Image (cartoon, rainbow, N blue to C red; front, side, top):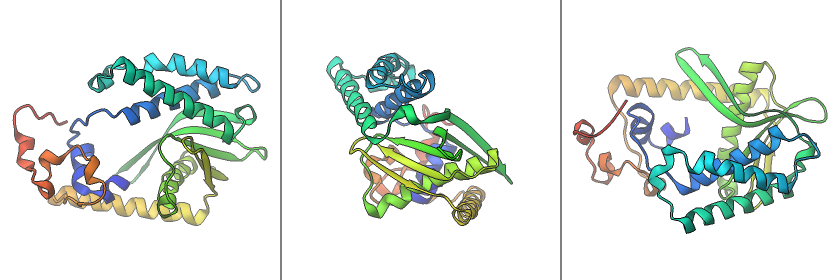
Amino acid sequence: MSSFKDCALAFRLSAIDRLPEPSSPYAAKGTLVHRALQLLMFEHDPGARTPAAARDALERAIPDVLDDPSLADLDLSPAERAELVADAGVLLDNYFTLEDPNAVRVLGTELFLSVRIGTLHLRGIIDRLELDEDGELVITDYKTGRAPSEAYEQARLGGVHFYAFLCEAVLGRRPSRVQLLHLREPVAISTSPSEQSIRGLRQQTIAVWSAVERACELEDFRPKPGRLCGSCAFHPYCPAVGGDLALLAAPGVVTT
């Protein structure tokens, strides 16, 4: 939803043409921290979720993530790899200042949920689903980048509301709370989804999907120049920055 609204052309090139994008060390670090927290929370019983256990989980996660063939284009030097791992360790240490993991009643980690709404197939992966002290569902999402400013805070929470929407559609229960744990600062941001917010998100999702279907029918995916252009990998194909969509038909360009 957000990628289509940010730039319809980038959405098309990524989600429809599926052009490859270069691996990012920031994304790799995020995946590494997520994997370490998954191992910590799901493989250790309450009382055993300690900083030492987290560091051990990080060491176990390193080959799973950084040696994955899909990240081969990162081509990290030994020093760069060590720096990335060290910073991931700092983020894990920061996690323990936000909550006591031994008090968390985990139901699932990296939980895949999917539902169909008409012609739309919605899918999402919840970092952590748990029960609070009242037996209510709570969704937790880990963030390894900088926390957003107040102007963008609600937009970031919108993604977690989406997980609440999926949770209610699949499990039949609306979570009582959704929270973002920003490990860099560290700071926690939480909100309580309501029937109105879930209904609004459903309506917005259907509207965006209708716009995607119209764009496909008309083959009309227009670029939207803005602040995200600097980090976009599709400049060679984007007419807004001098690129040419005709290059999609060039030999060697792989689409699926």
